[in-house]
Image: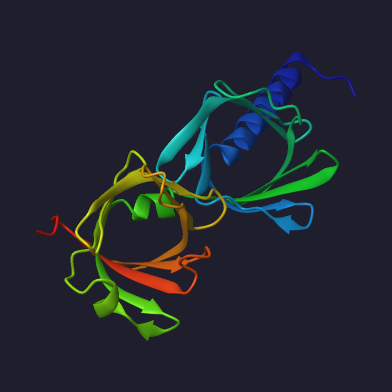
Length: 239
């Protein structure tokens, strides 16, 4: 069938509109719900990606943005390529994309293993453990092997900790001393590491969780593995 010039124009417009519609399907803010590396789950905490109109992309964890660059979607192959400005070149190439409504998956091979990323559309940045824990926290309760030892651990109720946004913690110990250092959250688990400025104090590792205004630390290393600390968020520094 011979196409007239008008039919060619209409067909071209149809292809352009189809391309625009497909691109619009994947533009927006997405949270990473699950990452599979082979058969192993390696989902990062509060990971998000924003694919902006015009080809700009941003990504981060929680309220922290750490990557920016560009993106390109090939509608003929359903492949998404991400280019990071500050980071190294992505040597593994484009992701094969499938999307349906509010859900999208990315798939590719990396070093012989299948990588599958499941994403869900969102309207706001996810909140990570690192975001939730910032502020001033008063030590409320201490248990050891399920026994309440608060009175022995902090008899005068002096202990509190200030978690600063710049990854510095400032603590008043049960003995009234000031302790400070760096804090770090694992990228894949809610595990907190405290690294003291005092070289004589060993690093501490805790599993953290939240409930309303409470924050719970469960010991993971040899020194604190039987301890559970419960903190309550407060607005002012204790006297």
